[in-house]
Length: 375
Ligand SMILES: [Fe+2]
Ligand SMILES: [Fe+2]
Image (cartoon, rainbow, N blue to C red; front, side, top):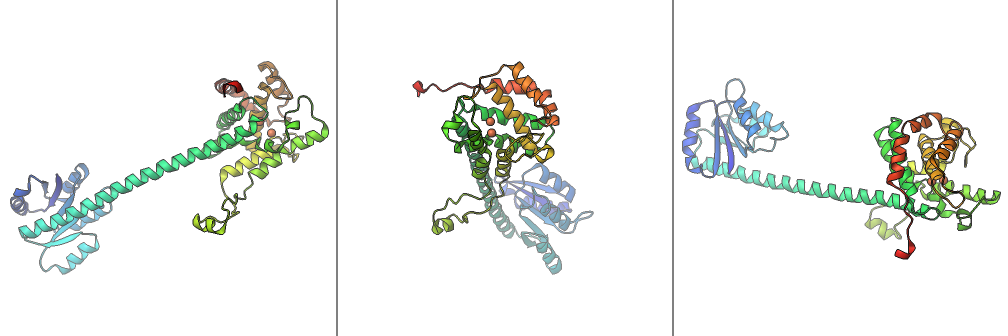
């Protein structure tokens, strides 16, 4: 049932309108009020489809009501019919300027009034349909965006795991590093955006291992000096993989036009930026004895100082081609020995405060080696 609101300070006019339209009561729910305040109260509580208002009223007039409706987000689209006197040309123009949908001379003739109201109801129905379609479209866009986002994030993590599979059992190391970095960044009071970024990008820290030959990456025992030199290159290889030059994925000019994406465009993607920083500097040491750049102290980006602790902590608990798995006491002994040398003492202090959380993460994402016979 359509809801129609009539506003006029003269009760006689409201009564006349009510009588005139009584045969419409089965289709229209009609409200008759004598002032702007009452009208606004009805507009706030009922979903009114059309407003029909007089101009001249004491205290607040019809223009005031029209202006309030047009400037209120929830009401601004409601069709508004202004009742005017025959000779009030200026007032009619003003009503249209303020956003009245239509005008009607007083006293209103029944057929004219019904025809105007029907027109406005049609306008309202179209508007409602457009709004409903916009809501549906908006929802669809949000769903698609969320899908794309989750696919993107999953790809990032799977890429990190792909690199880890070569020298660990399950690739869960990178998942744990992501979670360690998240809780450590939270403990350090880093901003929300930073926490989200480090959670998503720290799993890529060793992506450059993809470029290290098996004979070195999987070698049991100590690496020779030349082998170690090659191993250290995984930071720079990772940096290259995550370089800011967008991949030239469109093979021809036609493709580029079709997808309107220029080749080799510089990307401003903040995730890629942080991922690159981490891959390049996660082996730098607080005392300057790390690689590949020999940075020291605060020259090392904070994200890499966080990853360094998370990465070493997890690696010490894990079996690697070149080392056995250590017990908790041994892990903590090695970690503390490196506090202030390899690790930033401030970040380390936060790490010590949340050891329980690190332990929980380690238990939750435990390594379960893949049994090749079951594949
Ligand atoms: Fe590394
Ligand atoms: Fe690692």
